[in-house]
Structures are given as C-alpha cells and as structure tokens.
Length: 323
Image (cartoon, rainbow, N blue to C red; front, side, top):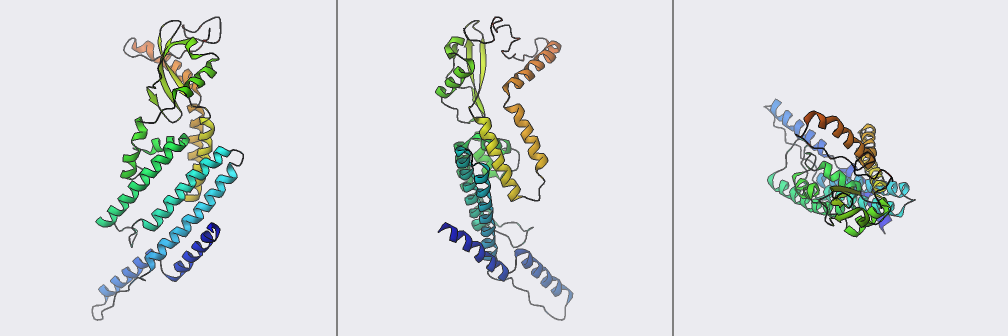
C-alpha cells in the first residue's frame, strides 16, 4: 500500500508539472505583458493570465521531491546503521519526522507568485502557525533523542538561522536541559572510580547544578580533606550516539543542499568532537590555563585546578581516590 502510494504520487506530480508552467514562468509572462503594454500606446495588449492550476502543480511537485528525499534518506539511514539497532531506530525516527515536516511545508506553506514577492498578512499568519506547530513537534523529538540533535539545536538557537517561532521554542535548550536520574549518575561514578561513591565523597548532591547534551555537573565534598569539588559526569555511550546522529545529519544535508560543499564544514565539527568528549584533555587545558594566567593576576581571578595526579589532594601512594 505504502509502496504503491509513493510510486504513484511522484508520477502524478510530474504529469501535472509538465502540463503547467512554473512560478518563474508566471512572473516572466506577467513581465512580458507589462513591457508590451508600456511600449505600445496605439494597441492595447491583454495581460497574459497564468495557468489556474499552476499553484497546485507546484505544490504537488514539491511533495514528489520531498517524498523522493524521504526515500533516499531512509535508505541512507538503514544502510549506514545496519550493525546497531539503536542507530537504526534513531535514524528512522529523525528522518521520518523530517519527511513529515517537509511534506507539510511543501503542501501548506503559503507561496508567492514570484521569488522576490513578500507574503501578505494572512499568508504570514498561516506560515507562523505552521512554524509554531513544527517547532513544538521538533522540540519533543529533540528531548526524546537527545545526543547530537540536542547539541545542534542548542548551537542554532540564537544564531539567527531559525524562524522566530523556532527560536522561542528552543530557548529552553540553553539552560533547561532535563537531567538524567541520579541512580544513573551514581552508577557511572562508581564504575569510573572503581569503588562506591561514598568512599570518596562525604557529600554528593543528587540534584545537578547544570545539565547539557553530553553530561551534567554535581557538587560534592571530598571525604579526605573536606574540600568542595565539582564532578562533571559524561553520559554513557553519548559519543557513540553523537557520531551516529552526526552521520545522519551529514547525509541529510548532502541530500537537501547537494550544491553546498560541506566537507570542510563537517571536518571542523568532527575535530571539535575529539576535544569535547575527552575530559582528560579538558582537565589538561584547565591546568594549563591556571598555571599560565593565575601568577599574573594574583588574587584577582581564580581558576580551579583539576583533581589530577599533580593536585595536592590526590593521594601520592596510589593512583585512585578510593581507599
């Protein structure tokens, strides 16, 4: 049933498209008619009316194009993640929703007869309602999938690339990202330390002071010295899912905007991943900053030191904080 629908719909759209002229042809016809009228004062030239069904034809053609994009994208997701069930599910979920979004915009987004023509007030209202509808659907999808999709939405929010309705809906991603349950965090910390959390910390706040796309931060107190520290915890498998999601997004971009040379752009983003997921390297940067900057400013600024092998609170006789 679905297969026959997907085959017939593009064919129907292409027949309609061949039958009627495009929006650009309408603009050209109107322009030619206007110029003929202005240059001939003795003979009136009747305006050329655009075909009545061209708007419908254009929308059907867009539907066919987006359906083709959907099929290609789903094929890409299936082929790329056959070895991981979770990857297939995430890819199918994201791409399926993007296909629905594309079809809805292709059919219901108001169109102008010429590319440089602005929408009237009623069409602007309809487009705004469409943006609001899909902004709400998209934010639910982002919170569901998390991973790179959450990071990407955070990056785009406030950058001026999204319509106002999306910007308003995505604002919650900047400082209200839902945290993971403490039971999950406790399990991660126990595994990384190699012992129970309460052997190292006399206090460990169950409520994080901040949460982001790849991890969250908790306040704690060292049992040995009573010093308050900040514990940054990375979610399990987050790097794997980030890379899966990134490959999906990369594939979608190549399909949607094939004319855009995105190789360099994606290369820079991938290189950024190397540092973002490496907390050891981040700790090294923090120590370098503290040792390079603090001596010049004395007590005017404070840069916290990582609890590494150089820290005075790290036991010298063992390479772990566990007793």
